[in-house]
Length: 307
Image 1: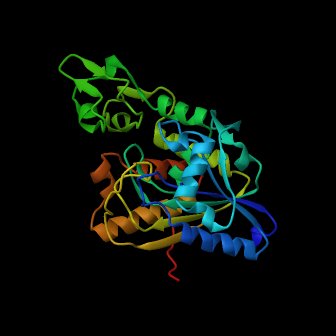
Image 2: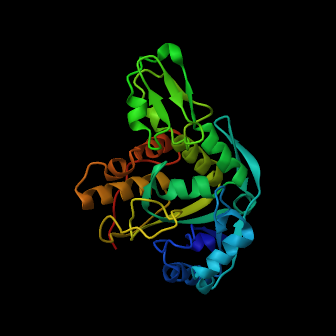
């Protein structure tokens, strides 16, 4: 925390939807804000506008939502980003929010949940998608949609079975996709045994890890994962969903891969499951974790220290 002294600190945070009350409690965020102010840091709550229909679609609308959900009571400003600067990493371009480009320190607070497209939402999902411009968010989703390679296809139907949005249809001689229904999760690509599908650009889970690395490289970052009100869907869903299990607590780390791996392990242990988020969402959350380690974003090895 001393590294943050007298520094502007964006607290990257999802501030919920109107009908969803499972987001991180503003009272907890105020505790973090008070600690930062206690070392003479200058924190502000930060997120970016979304590409789908929501109050969060515009900067003004998102600020209104932040007021409704109680985040002005945290004692610091709410800043919503919409534009950014292009950063190239591993030959992929991401438009990183200006507010994150301009800082040397980031505090990432993530609510651990299931996620229909990524399998799991934690630090990588929060920062990798929430730290980029709306233009890049659309590009990530569009670039994750599958391209069919007919010569490799044996029409086994595994892609149809694994499609979480029922966008793919396979029979003995034909492969079809409804592009309007395809959200670009990349699950069909991951489950094809013959490499008959490839992403237009890069699968979503890999894009999230790359985007996160593009944001935090050359910066100091601390990650807090909140394992309370752990729901099967993310906080973007505009309805209240009952939690999967009782509250587990909080994790803190300087490694986004390790903290997300530990979060998944703790939920699996609590639920007595080997991969509860995959069972619920149909998407393997470990794809983003393993790829994050592959690109040196972090390590899947960790040690839990209880306080």
